[in-house]
Image (cartoon, rainbow, N blue to C red; front, side, top):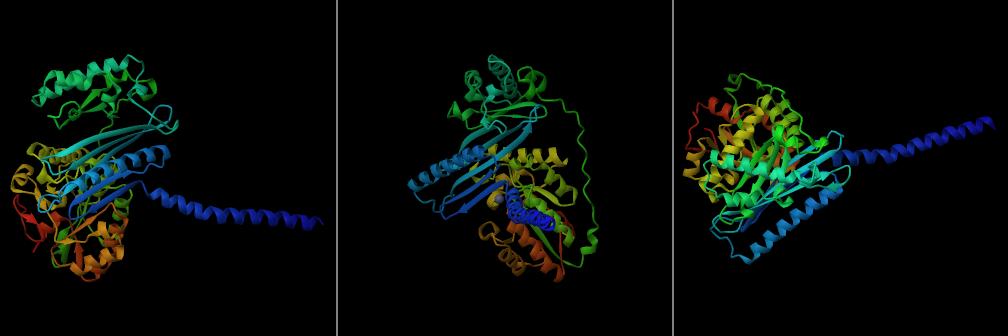
Length: 463
Ligand code: ZN
């Protein structure tokens, strides 16, 4: 009897363990799979229009729902308007670009807050893009959306914030010699939570963004100011105060390699646009080591801050960092001021992270004209092999496309925000390595081919 009962007990335990494992395995698999996805990319190109949307997936149900609603609404608005328009024909295509910046931070109670800012640009065939801004502030512990008033100590603090904002706006205007009248500024900074929708916490203080287009149709620009820590902390609730950060930025020294070893090899420059991404770019970097491959990344300015760790890693491991502009707009459709902004801001954020300004520019869609070339004063790198990876999203097809079109001096276009592109590139390298190819950055390629890059050529291939 005793033995039997013991066996039964053991049996029960074993059975329970087996059941737990059987239920747990798919669960773990599901969770890791899910864990990989932290953003969503939509790219669609038709004869008539193009849509490029990036948005985050935070796994905060309430927040994700709101974000998806916002994206859906913008998409619908755009498509409905396009439907009413005459086909673009030979004119530039209608366009919708949505990019975002995300900040996740903890307050002093270890409570996480998300600040997500969307910039939306739609081109409807008039002479310029129409801009839209939207920011979500979300407290993930209390599952609540917050506004600036929730962060401020007292109800009167917003009046103080308005006065400070006015002061720093005027200072900004003077510094940049902008012609804006004072009344407009007063309206923009007036005491009203809606005016303070776009804020985020920076090391230097509270950053505020004021879209002037909301107040005056004449002005399409937005102005960003920072209220310094000393002044803003007095207004913030204790748990949200910004701590002084006097950490010194460490200098990144990139890996060097002797490229003379590739002199007699066939060379290929793999290039990756639209990133970086904390998930897929990291996978790529892991894989490249196996093939002694260095590649070139053309990164988007608006993604740099949130993905700076992987950008630092790429640079440190000897890959080249170039610019793909800030918001991925068609440069041909912008006025010179906006073009300069797209290029300058990107160079600045890249320099802030890796310590050097990029010298290579890949314009979105490859679109550039003489004037923009002059403005940029960068080397313009196009491509010779378009893998259409964003469309097929199939690693085998992408690898096949690369291998079939490979030649000495080729520049391959890929996008490191898609996992199949990353896997396809690595698969292709496996084959091409056996065929005697070496994988180099654009600058390495230029050196090995004895080409001095200039500011007028559009580089599609190196002979
Ligand atoms: Zn692109």
